[in-house]
Image (tube, rainbow over all chains, first blue to last red; front, top):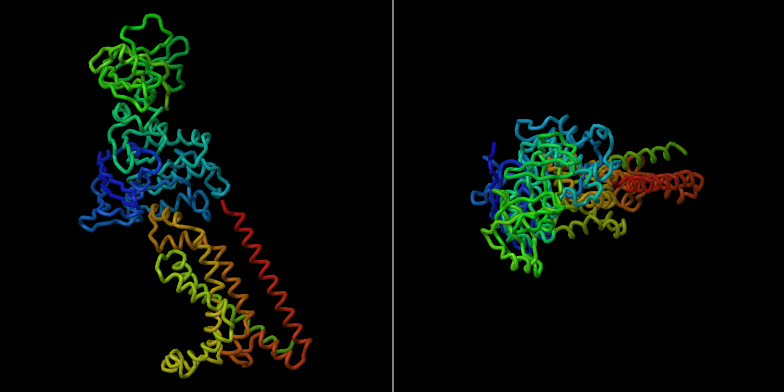
Length: 359
Length: 225
């Protein structure tokens, strides 16, 4: 069921021109990431058919929804998709249950991909069903909006910054639900965001947009580890690593294994064997030529420099180090780079000061 | 009140009821189109709909008389169809009132549709509702306060009209003699007591209607999420 998504659009709005031409994986979460005004939402609207981008082509698996070369355009209401807008936009004249029913009754395509009861449980809506939208908090509304989109059993879920209208606390309240979705959804999700944190937590595949152009498209681990892109991420440059909770050790520590080594973090509540996603900021990584003998840092890994690039800040460089196959980014000063003669091929020790757990 | 007064009251209520029903059918699609179109025709049609707000009723009545009369284009058509002439009949009153009260229904309904905006309809489309479906299942229910306001104003305004009725309906008992005309007759005949009964009733009715409209608007405004 890895039917790929193919999207080609050119959107012109005044001076702004968006060129979008990518193939996306047919499952998992694809993040469309970029600064405000880079054309992310235009892309998503074109995919949904809400706006008709001229000369476009859009296909999900074997279903072609737009092919202007053949004058083929499926209107939005005949596309089997779900769309979550920035604001929940629940129908005010319907209860939560009726909002969910709205899409379910109009399901396109015969097969039901989601059990409505399961969607309700997944998003924690059991106690809200009989209430009207006006009594719900912002976070609850957005959860209902996501459930409503899923209740229609779409074969593609489009999300346009679904957290951007919420304050930090509400975001923290919804993110766990999105992560549960991520783990249990079999359909592809295209998620528009300008938050590096959301991308690091949720995305499997990353498309970077800047100034109406696709700057990069690839698996999230590889793309976040590229040294030539981080100006877009600025201070948030860093990699994500998929790990497995391997062991609980003495001193309230947990060991997380990844393909080429392991990391030690404060003890985790998740059962052994759970998959955990970690984020390591480039600013939290330093490099040494010899294995530091006496250091308070617990995570020290051996690796080999694979790329060096000037960073967005004067006097600083970004270094990509491979620990086995796993890339890690480090931000160091230009002076250190010169004094340690850091260049591709050099064997180094990677010292990781902080590991952020994203699950 | 005598039998003639009661007949006038009944005729007025019947006229206003029929006109309000027809107005909702005519004004709702018109308001929908005005709220959503980007056509250059929008200001033109909008102005035509609003004309009765600024024109003296006698002007509308005069031209309706010409158009509907035996030598007017619509008069000829109704004659040819065997429907007879419309002036000085109940049907003629209905047509005149429709035109005269149209802006009072179109404008609140149009405002309600405009307040909804495009987004709820886009949401409906992404959930599988086609344009027709979304109109019935989302736009109309969401515009309910506007429709209710429009219906009340249309009814009340039809009850309160005088000039157009006199021009095109004349003064035929149980056919075209509505309350406002009956009051005029009473005053002409110096029957002030009877005039008071009807006029006072109109004052009370108008007050109640307007309180209802403003109350409704406040309640729905408070409901907004």
